[in-house]
Length: 234
Image (cartoon, rainbow, N blue to C red; front, side, top):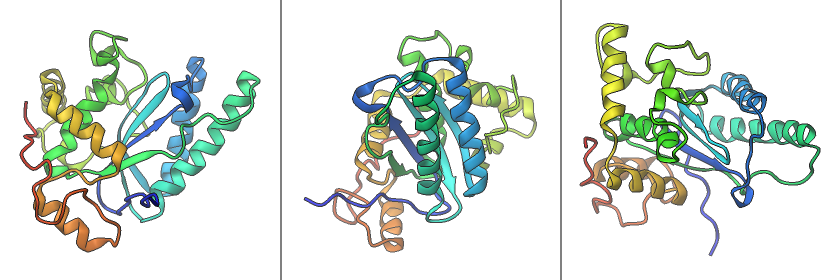
């Protein structure tokens, strides 16, 4: 069966996962993490992709991003991927592929899933047992949203600004949201939708997306509430 083209729609938030080949490490030193962040910053600006959240794990990374054009996200990921492989291979004196094929991504309904997706991303290091608290992990955007550092890569989504009227209020509300966590159903839905490339949202949202693209956006037929019953609250 032919592989579906990747679902990419401008103006919508996308959850992106890029994995190392055979789950191998894609970072071997702090400088490697920083190189990838620098490349993301460079090409996100060049291709007009707003990055709302990220986490770099030892053998994969996650992004939450909104492209401003239909080609912005794939062009950014292609440029970052190629540049980083050259850098990593030279640094490690290795050759060959680094990535597990093309990156995985899906469109998420912002009003229902965006903040949950941010928490899902921030909590990756905690789930992996690397840290006890998400703010203790250095290679994610979580510290930016707590006001602990300014991250030039991050462009907060409008829904984050709605969490409070002052920086302190927004930071406190977001910290509480992440500490509350996400339930296993949400976690599985975010993972499955991204790896399979199906849009994540309520039935009306998915149906509206289908009108905007010839690419099938849902495994289920139009009008069926795939994942619609999942709450954005724990």
